[in-house]
Image (cartoon, rainbow, N blue to C red; front, side, top):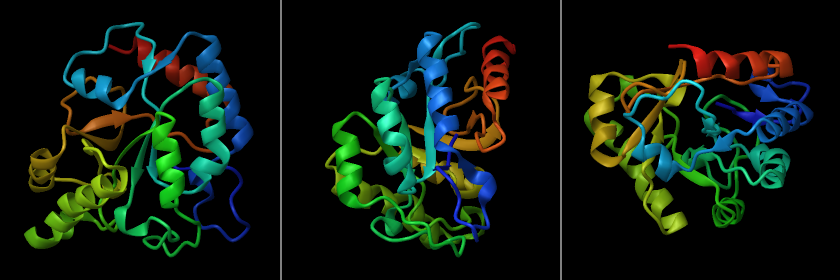
Length: 225
């Protein structure tokens, strides 16, 4: 689970969310040179509720929020190794800047999203406006979950099947709403994806995950049973 690629602005309040571009490049190079294969969203969905075999080298690279830095600093690196990824978009923030954290970092533009989609990058929903879903009434929740799906499907011209919970927060009510519209959903819980397909865990990546730590986390994920 990545968020932003590159160097944070001097006044950024979220420096911990950034993965430096060179660090990201080293991580992707390591994956490529050691036989890892990125999993398409279709393949992930088909195996979401199946146990992950020990030693498995399939990996799903995800980006939450849909920052433009994924395009400017990460997309080319993914293409270099013929890797795919899933980018979770906040539907109402496309072509704008980050609004939910009082930040000013630009969000992906529609033309960038379409270009990445044509190159094999998958997209999912990260809600309509990045609100805390567990605090919403039924009407508001439906807009965040189902309304975002409608917007993204109109943008991309294809079905959107995956969802990522804003702030990683969900309860049974939220999960049931997501299950009505999507085939798989991601949490921010740390771990490997061997549990039910509507609370898939991930390994959080940030500026502190230098290559030795990255390698250890991969090893731990493949051998932890």
